[in-house]
Length: 173
Image: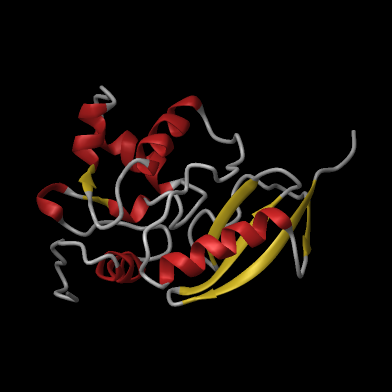
């Protein structure tokens, strides 16, 4: 069997360097360097740094627009078909959370008819598409700022960037 090849570009963002990985068809992930679950699921496949790539250039255009503070429709993003069925349900839900708005883990659990908000939290934490599939818009009960794979301070930055209301126990807001 032929080994799968991935293309990778680095994107300097206000929250740190992002690693963008795709194959010819799909975006496999956007990770902040050194975050939890970094490049998860890619195994020992060949990842090659490239200077241009059709999928990654589209993603970079989306990220540029996002960091300029403009809202956009991301429904045509070619996201890779990865994850369990449960994770895919949660990630699809995340994509529908509008810019500048938040939901709680408990609300997602209720909407998806899942008994455990912790199970939702696990799936949210394994989302491979930072920023574009907005897991940073999920808060704990009472709009409390809670875990984020690449660090809570980055989550706080993204929420402030979007003008979102949240409660930060460290009063970074």
